[in-house]
Structures are given as C-alpha cells and as structure tokens.
Length: 247
Picture (cartoon, rainbow, N blue to C red):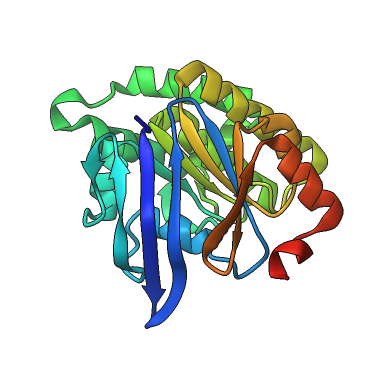
C-alpha cells in the first residue's frame, strides 16, 4: 500500500479547473518526480496536497497512510507527516531560523514531549554542517536577506530536522548554483535512503535528478498525467522537450 495516494484529483482555483483527474502514488523511501512545462498544474498539486484553502478539491481523494486527508487543514497534515518545500520561500521578519525550527518540532511532538534545548541545538548544528551552512544562519531571521541558494538550503534544513514521512519539493533546484544543486540533491537522496522519507519532487529540469536518481517520473500537461516512466523519461524530455505531448 502506498504511503501517499492521489486518486482522480480534480481541483479548481477561482472557478477555473486546473487539475483534471490526477492519480499517482508515493511509497516509503521512494523518490517520485513530476515534470512538465509552466502552467501544467505542478505547483497547484503541491499546494493542494498541503491543504491550501485557495485550491478547491472538486473530486477525488488524497489518502495518506490509509487515511483520507482531503478535508484536513494544513497544520493537521503537517503533524501527520507531510512536508512542503516552497518554490518561493517566504521571508519572516523577527523570527530566527532556530526559533522557527524549534517551534515547528515542538508543534509536532506536543507539549508533553518538547525537545530539550541542548538536544535541539546539537541536532541543529549537525544538520547545518551537513548542508555547509554557517552557524550564524541559526540566529538570522527566516529567509530575510537570503540568496536563492540559501533559502533552498534552509528549506532542506527544515526537512532534515522535522523528518516527515512524505516530503513535497516544489522546484527545489530553482535559483541554485551548480555546487548548491549537487549538495541539495545528494542530501535529499541520503535523507530518503536513511530516514525512509518518500519524496514527490516537482521540477522542470533533469539536472537535480542526476543526484536524486528517482524511482518513477510522471509528465504533467494541462492538469493531467500524460506519461509515466523511469529516469530515461527525464533524459528524453531534456533532449526533446514536451512538444510530443502537445500534439
């Protein structure tokens, strides 16, 4: 049984149909990729999976660990083990990276099981070192003044510390240089293998997939899944584009 299963999902945004019957699944420790051109519905799918109220589910279901979560609020989905890495992470002035992360962890663990500060600081230091992040970032306001690559590292820092069951990654490779891309790709691959985190990776390009080595790739066009295959499908799209799916 899949950890995350999307069944015939149809979604409207401001009365406009965006997703037109999307079905796919993600298993434990599996890396699944969705590729497609701009406007194909990829980011709409990501937002819908996390329960964004602007995205209205007209039909279909989202099943997570055998539970239908289609009507659950975003915070409840997060507490159950869903995580979304944003395409454009927001700046939050006045809230440090460390305070944000500790609050998020304690929200999941609950008041009776809050993480001790020494343990939290130890974990934070270890995970920041793995991402080649200067320790000073822990005291900076979340994403404020961060470069594109720094924002994406901070998103993966959150993922690595929160340890979700399923991570949805919306264009994690955008705005990153070659070195950062390799670091993020290899880190995500390691998290998937070591923690068993299932990942749904949304991207336009094959470059990050060279490090992630996905198990399955879906092609999305105009709100529908139009093709499915292995890593060779990404290579084909890299060479030929999406023209054949528009015919």
